[in-house]
Length: 331
Image (cartoon, rainbow, N blue to C red; front, side, top):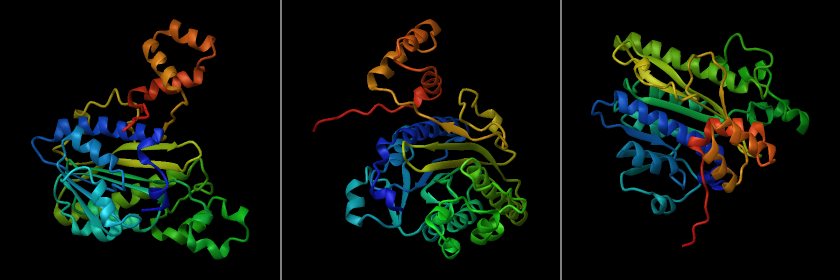
């Protein structure tokens, strides 16, 4: 758990809320198509809000839930905020705790690291993909910035604060991540525009190697099908990247799962990331817009009146089904 876990209320971040709802909608479709009576477990980082746990228990009917908690909260605080008895809290770093969990069960695993990319996250991949059964879903999130100042290994090379905020060079990336770095890494791979793609390539490479080893040792035909390739940034917040998909073999075809109405689901492995961009609208503006959405003449009246812009309208159309509506609820 990083510092943001104790400084940010994860239930009131609009982009994160939209992402969570997008994942829920698609997970419901996945489990509804391939579940066939299987009981799934959910593994994630609950923090103090346990937002994903509340949502997935109620909406996906997952009754076995494990929250990995490293630090930041006392056991008493976590137990007090634990929303359901079915949530089991395991203390420790994910690369230490994950080997203790039975990953042979059908699982939805969302390792939502709010910090920067680190090597131990690839240890988690090793544990997960050697065991996770077909039909399971794996999702990874992290801060996508690959800046020099974020990595202790580069501290001695940084000569000024300005230099430290610059993107890492391919050589610097390799000095931190070694063979996890793609051999044909581009010179601008760590820039803000391309950092998510570099992280994706690193994940693709490592997962591909693990599954190849697994197939050879277990005589399987397992593969990992990418479904999630998402980026977003909250207002003045961290630049986040989410990557994920489903463990498949010949018995499960992703084509059998209807995703056509989910524009955020990756269609091809090399497609650019889907950007979650939530326009800043008042509650009243969103209500009025919902009443006229997709009626072009009425939409235009709102634009002509200066209530919304064309850009806000287009952004809203993409995410309105998943948008939060925050209210002040008095006790």
